[in-house]
Length: 416
Image 1 (cartoon, rainbow, N blue to C red):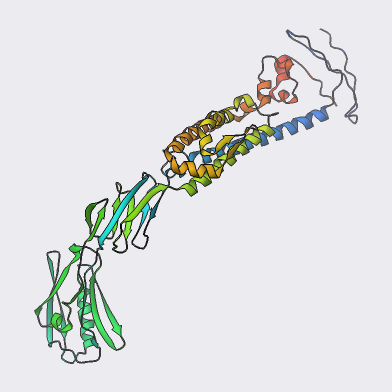
Image 2: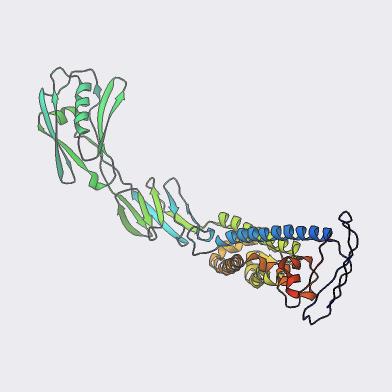
């Protein structure tokens, strides 16, 4: 086949006409040859298309990630999700308060506090610190009995010691013990007293001080018990319980209750979903779905919508389940939230809301993962055009990016 001569076009005349010749090899459809072509607009359009497509695909990823994060908050398999968050309310917080773990089920407990758990406290005589000690001179040995364990302690007392010096010597001796007792000297003006107490509460923390040689315990009055070591006693739903501490656990250890004081009236502890946080996450899910919806509408000319319809279809399918919770689909395709209806129905039918939102969030999650697992180029209209089996039905300049010219055997004179 003879190729016609190509007319020379000066370099300076970028927009001038020039001749295009086509060599066609085994094409099954007729092609209308282009008689004149200006490459400057082509390159400008190609650059614009590349920029727009890159921006669209990056935004598609960002909107999908945002929607995925919002949907995760309604997945009951995630321990820290909003759907699993719980709060507990005490009818008498001055008597008892509580905290709850996220996987606790909604429940109500009736608590009656009979007695708090206490540590043992012994307080010596309050005497003028500068007065003469009544302690005998010499080595003072005494025993500290705790939970069937006896420890021997001693110190030296001088006849010239003052009362303040005597209690300081005993404090130093007690501080050497291995039983975990706490000692302190209390002062009221010039008068002082030695106080010894257990560091933990409960009946098992009881201790006894007694003289073995000398009269240190008797002379200082350290055998005087101010507070006895006792266990806490309380009723939970009518059943009596005891505890060595004032921290108790209820409901398979998911609820931690702090006892503050005994009372005459039962304390009602109510575990319920954290509706405030859940409402915030519901707002976020609706907002992010609507943002995704608006984005797809704005880019429907460049994105292959047939591959991204499931977000709207999922919301439409869930519409009849979510309507009673104040979540509805508008004619425009957006989701709307009626917060007043949401609050009233979620508080009265939380399990129904949890089931409905679980299905919706799981489907959103699956669609986002599917989207993220595929090359983003497959969601572009131009990609489908480029790999089409009928390249001549394509009018998009962007298809040239995929070497469609070479595939069809078309040669283009690119001389300026």
